[in-house]
Amino acid sequence: MRALIQRLFGPPPSTSKDDAIQRLKIVLMHDQCDLSPAQLESMKDEIVAVMRRYVEVDQAGVEFRLSKSDEGVALVSSVPVRRVTTRPAPSPS
Image (cartoon, rainbow, N blue to C red; front, side, top):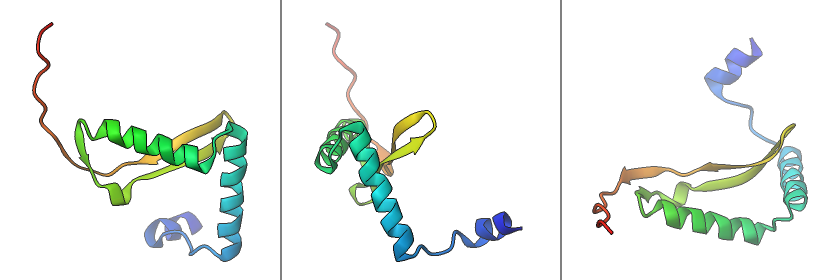
C-alpha cells in the first residue's frame, strides 16, 4: 500500500537530515573513486561536448552523479535531448 501511495504522490519531501546524509554519501563515493567534484564536473562537460556533436542538449537539465551498488560505483547521468541534429555524411577516405 505504501508503494502505491508513493507511486501516486511521489516520495515524501526530504529533510535536512536526509540531504546531509545524501551529501555525505556523495563525498564518500568521490573518495572511493579518487574523483574530485571538480574532476566529475570536467568529465561531465567533456561528455556533454561530445554529445552535442550529435544532439541538441538542454544544458539546464543535465545531471551527473555517482551511484554506489553492491557491484561498485557507477556514473549515472540524465541528459535531456531537445532534438537530434543532422550531420553531413563523412567523406570517403
